[in-house]
Length: 193
Image 1 (cartoon, one colour):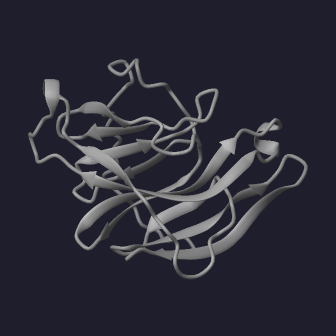
Image 2 (cartoon, rainbow, N blue to C red; image 1 turned 180 degrees about the vertical axis):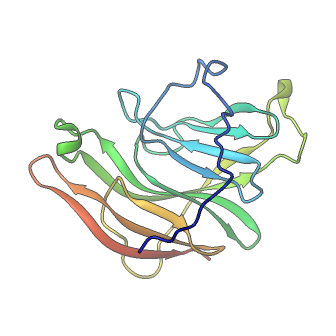
């Protein structure tokens, strides 16, 4: 049933039109999450004719982009991404993704991974800048080992979002191959301690 609620204020704000970042390829299937402070947006991987492995930070206060890493993860697109806080430390967590494009486009299924990757976030203080005036936000890759339970199978095109400070939920996705693509409807919970 749909509620009869009218939202009286709804507006999009364009932060970046891409003209100031010619070094950042346009892409589809990128994973996007925002820092817990709400000041930094992270864009991870995506597809721009091939699978990407780069990571960018957009400082919403300074209106600037910075490449915070390249080859920080396996080249992929359409991954799951979330921001989690574990023991007071913030992490960007990435799960799965398409690592080989389908030859049939959206009718097929490429190659997928079920890798779990985490990056420790060091977010700049408001107004703080790094060398040459660039934002000082950085990501450091950390090792993740699953010690309990099963690991979801390889997939891309999944839903993945925080459901608590150190937990996230994963739903569905696409797996299989071009001959037998399989759309999933399974639900998983990830807890990191």
